[in-house]
Length: 242
Image (cartoon, rainbow, N blue to C red):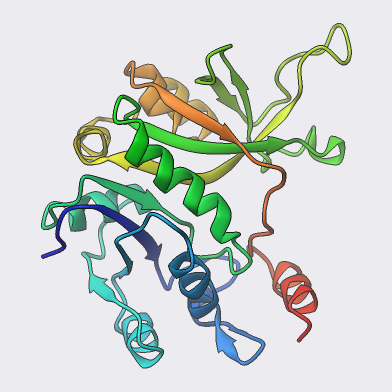
C-alpha cells in the first residue's frame, strides 16, 4: 500500500489505434515509458512514482529498468479511471496524473502541480495551460481553455475560444493534459456519469466543470510534444539527438 503524500501516476495501456504497443516503442534505444518515468521521477514534490497498466509486457519493461508498477483491470475506461481504481488501495493525499506518451515531459511542470497540491489544499483539481500556437487555433486535437480572473477554468473546447472579436485582449491558451487530484476529488470524479458537454466535445475534464468541481489552471511557457503518430515518434527521437 502506498503511504501518505503525493503520488505521480503514469497510466499506460498497450492498445493504441495508431501506434499499438506505444509505451514500449523504442526511443534512443529505450522504451518510451522509461523516458517518461525517468523525467517524472526528477520532479520535486512527489513521494512516489508508479506506472499503472493492464498489460504484463509493460509491467515487465518497467520492472526491467527498476521502476514501480501496479496492475489494473483491463476494463478501465480512461486513465483517470485506472488511477482512481489503484488509488483506492493507497493512502495518498493527492495524485498527479502524467500521460504515458510524453517522453519529453518537463519535470518542472510536474513539480509545479505537485507543489501546488501540497500548498493549496483548497483546490481539488489542478491542471496546466500554455500559450496557444496560432497554427493550432483550428486544430480540434489542440484543446483550448478559457480562465476566470482567479485562474480557474471556465470552459474547455476543441473549437477556438475565446472568439476574438477584438484581437489582443485575451491570451488564447492550450490545455495540457496533466492533472493533479486531491484523493477525494479523484474518487468523486471517477464515480460520476459522463455529462452532456463532456460527450459532445469528447473532453473528460468537462465532467468536473458540469458538476461544479473547480479546476485550477497553472500557466507554463510551452507544451512538451506528445507521441500519437509515427511522425511524432520520429520528431521526439530527433529532439533527443538519437
